[in-house]
Amino acid sequence: MSFADSILAGFSLVWSFEAFFALFAGICIGVIGGAIPGLSATMAVALTLPFTFAMQPITGILLLLGVYKGGIFGGSIPAILIKTPGTPASSATILDGHPMAERGEAGRALGMALWASCTADLVSNLALILFAGWLASFALNFGPPEFFALILFSLTIIAGVSGDSLLRGALSALLGLLLATVGLDLVYGTNRFTFGDPNMMGGLNFIAVLIGLFAIPEVIAMAWNPTAHLGKAQSLGKSKVTFADYRRSFKSIIRGSFIGVFLGSIPGIGAAPSAFLSYSEARRKSPNKDNFGKGEIEGVAASEAGNNGVAGATLIPLLALGVPGDVITAIIIGAFMVHGLQPGPMMFILNVDIIYGLFIGLIVSSVFLFIVGSVAIRGFKFVADVPKRILMPTVLVLCIYGVFAVNNNIFDVGVMFAMGWVGYLMLRYQVPAAPFLIAFILGPLLEDNFRQSMLMSGSDPMILLRGPITWFFWTLTVITVVAIVRTMLRTSKTA
Image 1 (cartoon, rainbow, N blue to C red):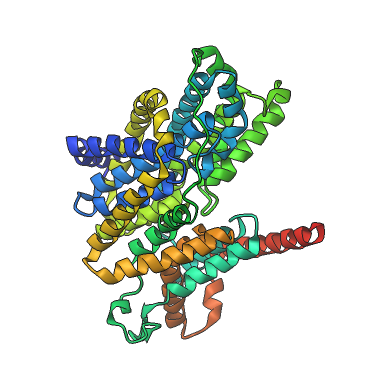
Image 2: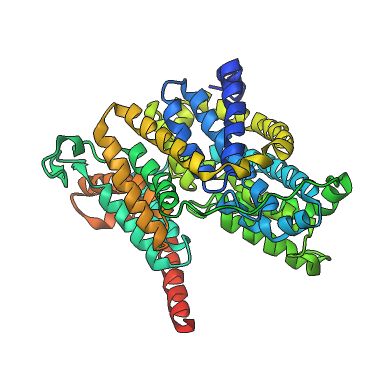
């Protein structure tokens, strides 16, 4: 199929009321979810996922991508208005956004957050379109040994960049790998850790695990401390963002966008580190560096550009290599799998129409984000005041419905609640959940490619070192492990 034919095939898939409505509705859902502290973009995507099962593949995936993009921006609303980030990615926005709100400039801060978010989102989408196809064509040279080395490197990165404690991140990833072995053996078909229960022969349900891990702990935390409340939202004020503000912050926005693209294309890093790195770089190079932390509009622009620049870039490893870029794209993989699609290099050959349909939808999403965000700035400041005693029971009902609807199996609901308590303990003891989920997804791929490599070579482990691609990823893995160990030793000495 030629390039022109691919574009036309993508247009034929996306050019429908259902697809555009799903994308627009997803952005609305995401902005609302991001604007409610405690809900987060991750939980919003997880709760929306079951509703995509009956949709066409392109429509369902665009819905989830809309929720993702809307949720990242939506987190800036409570961050600026009530000094509570709606998502972890909006934490850096508090530093200058809330001081601006206290001066009566909340409308100006939110306006800059919207302009920076849409600019960075567009840059990120263009990077995805330009680089994903090239990376996928390169990945066609991958065999089982190469994929094993890539996935092992991804797991090392994910464990190493998660949270303050490297040890907790590694333990979380190992627990995810352990639970990924439940079910039938991939090669011999024997039962593993099923304890004689036929419900476990197919492994733990992915949807039950992810909703239990991210949504249920918040419900349990609310039940544990029902008196927790949020601060009063600041008024928007009369000041609005101007073109002069945007022009003054443009360098920081573009710099933050490229930081987000770079960090987002590395599996496991996510939006929060990108936002803080973009903020620190803007502060370092700004002539107004002394104003940062006191209500500098350039700080808001840099933070929002950094976290929104990640949104499109996390799809680069997902589409090109089949490796999720962050925890939200790990959830979105579920939508691909439910519709019989396997992200990776072969998708650019077998399902190129869906790939280009997603590209077109993502470009349109930047426009929709600006439209929805403009309305959200004035209308959704009240969303931050939704009482948790109303919010959390509603979330619980949606969780139970979503998990049961996948297989009509009450056992999956039990798995969800069990994982909910695991997630609550992880939350309480500050063990990051993202490495667990991504390891749970990548675990079967890691094992499958290792077993295939051993079958190909007659159990000769040297096949794992064949060719320059495997050497490249093994070298990166060793460098990452050394860096992690050095960081742990340095931390233990200063503690």
